[in-house]
Amino acid sequence: MSARVGIVPLEGGWSLRDEYPLVRSRCNYNVVDVYTIAEITQDYHSNASVNRNVEYVFPMPPSAAVCSFKAVINDTKIIKGVVKEKSEAKKVFDQAVAKGKTAGLLQQEHADVFRVSLGNITPRTKISVYISFVSIVVHDGSSAQALRITLPTAVAPRYGNPPTDIPWFGTNVQNRFELAVSIQMNKPITSVSSPSHPIGLTLGCHQQEPTSDHDPSKAYVYLGTPTMLDDDIVIVVSAQGLDTPRCSVERWLESEGAEETTDAYALTLVPKFDLPPLPCQEYIFLVDRSGSMSGGRITAVKAALQILLRSLPSRNTSFNIVSFGSDHTSMWPSSQTYAASSMEEASRHVDAFDANYGGTELHSALEFAFNSRNDIRTGSTAGSERVPTSIFVLTDGEAWDLERIIQSVTQNCEAAKGAGGLLRTFVLGV
Image (tube, rainbow, N blue to C red; front, side, top):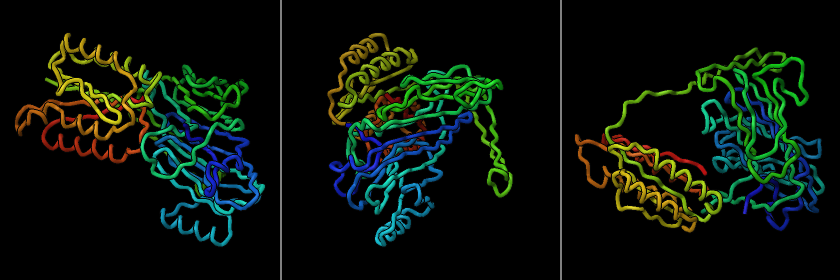
């Protein structure tokens, strides 16, 4: 089951979800180098017969920061967001609702889940929600010369107890999404594509119809047709110079509303390291085999893991594979020396993988991997040679217990560093 963005009454929940259908949804993205400014508009119409308190849940990129929020009721009453301390904001909201006023409360419930509470919504009401946020665009894993823009349009189903009560929505045939993305790079754009949706593209300007004033560093992307809010929209932009240090400048003029003309500078540095080879190293692969990994995901993990196994350093390397779900198992009790025989045994082991481990108990599997390291198992002492360990987690990430996981990784990495060792943990998303 997937959670959809949308409005749901606090009283009645799922049974009353159709009282607030989404009739129009629009998103304008402005991408400048690796930075984005997004403006989202959602229009809903209430079919309710009585006053209700409702909530609107929507997903955002994990790195996003909300800049503004506004709700317009019946094109006349405007509710604007004001930043306050969390408990104070909740108190002000409750007081306004108690007085019979229409009020709104925007909260970040998770790294990528935000919630807007709207109180005392009257019957037969039009609700327009306006939200703007900024975020950073990540590099595409396939190339240092490409950026991957992801617009989340559904909160993925996750294993475990969510940090808040989230309304779960079914597919709404009226839930349509319109998108426009204006792209400005520092150097010429070489390609724009989308692996997720059919898109329209205009190179050289920031509008759908081409202009005579062609600029190779500009592009305009739009959806070929309004789409259902079912899957994340992914756009990959390739441009020259994305792997070099650069600086972007944005100017806010007095004529545009600034108290005084202001310049903002964003410096982007792309690290490049020439590190000496390690004398020895250990690799532990933590593989998610929970039920949510079924189908194409487990197939992708198996293919990726086969490549990783064949890419390990051939000398002075040890490795192990740990499968996890509701429980965890390891291929060997401890990491084995990397050789042709052990690699072939591991390859056959991976070929037999299936998504049959139940839930997604990542924390306990991570603790097992940390404690099975050669340094821990052999009890290395101060002054003895430490074995650098890299742990790779291959997962779809569909678990809520992120805070405890991050805390565990931080504690173990710091403990290894304090003992003169090196422990690194990487996540490969599926």
